[in-house]
Length: 256
Image (cartoon, rainbow, N blue to C red; front, side, top):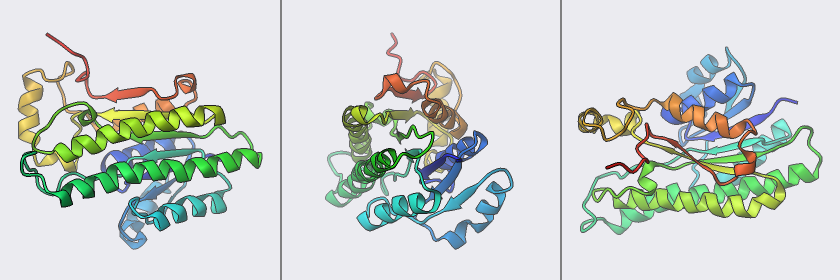
């Protein structure tokens, strides 16, 4: 039976690259985002020329959407082998931490951190049920996409940093709890990646990269993140549940 993966926030950018990478490695991939399926029909046609993809609308900040996504996938495909929690948002307006609003803080935490937590919870319970049901060749895994902002101060978007630091702890908690269930959980931390989110500050980052802020002096590409996700899905890292994979050009290296 073909293995099945869900990738949230996957109609473009990093999420789409992850979906394509999983498809190229034999997974049926269910993409999801907050737009209606009619808006991604052309994308699905393109993807289905080289594999099997589907789309389910899901706002990860809503309990009903999360449950519908997970339940629908398992009912249709009989299994959920991989959940990649990629969906997230940036600050609508960058503000100094002395000016950050409660509205912005709560939005970032609700979607990025709370949404990821309860996606893990919902999927994990369904994965445990699939194991109990004796699903064939079943070794499920969860991969959370956070950011180098999980440990890097950026005072003009503090709520974003806090939400990503929260995802780091979400990963640890579920890796710990699910170890006894045989479900590894990993975290991938993208660095400066060429996406729509970084396009607005492209010149700033190009200058920083040229000056050596990252040992590898180039913008990361969505495929660099997808490769780390795929590494976590191979099974070769399972004994290292809770491992963080840095897709950041070496930014995490502390240097003098």
